[in-house]
Amino acid sequence: MNDGTMNDGTGNGAGTSDAGLVTAAYEAIPLPDRRSFTDVEMAERAAKFLEEVKTRHSIRDFAPTPVPRMVIESCILAAGRAPSGANRQPWHFVAVSDPDIKHRIRKAAEAEERAFYDGKAGDDWLAALAPLGTDDEKPFLETAPWLIVIFAERYGVSADRKIVKNYYINESVGIATGMLITALHCAGLATLTHTPNPMRFLNEICGRPENEKPYMILVAGHATEDATVPRHAKRKKSLDEIATFR
Ligand code: IYR
Image (cartoon, rainbow, N blue to C red; front, side, top):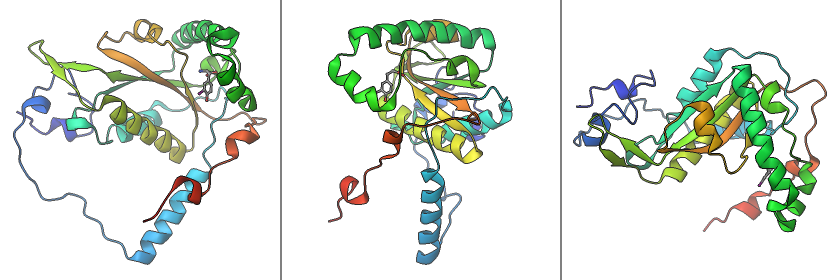
């Protein structure tokens, strides 16, 4: 049975060990944490959050300044509150601060990126990336204090070693990743999403099983004093372009 340990924020129990997550029966409980705000309060809160996320910028110039593990733990727990298909929580986060592991990730990632920028990407893709100024050198993979390697659990394995299907895996892990980025930003950290495809090398380096597929590396830390961002990245679409109200 699910004894509630899934929800105590300890991060234990997902996937392989907690059969209750897979077999629990329906049981309704009163809505926890009910909150109610006036329309004015909601508008203020929404506007305040918008201002907060407007100050999020993907950066590539990371300072070596350490960041306490506790901060990363809270942000990962926040990501773990994301909704997921059948509440399977099909994600695993490997938070790397070890310089040797970061070095190995950098070397392997740069090998993939060299192939990408040397032709694998194709002309259209390289043209699309030109205004971002990216290349195959990824020093931030060693400079930044934390690399959070996000894995998508393609299927679970129950305590009795049976395969357990997961649902809407990409959607679920995408939402959790968005929440992680937002949590890190709200904590005061800068991030970069990095996808040195193919990323299978990350299983070996991070010691993750083959039922988990590397989804993304999220680089996290502080920006250097002279950090820059590409102007292109700050051209955000207007509300009219991204939304229709009917
Ligand atoms: N993974 C490569 C290429 C890259 C691809 C996209 I789409 C970007 O928005 C940025 C980079 C790299 O990290 O350089």
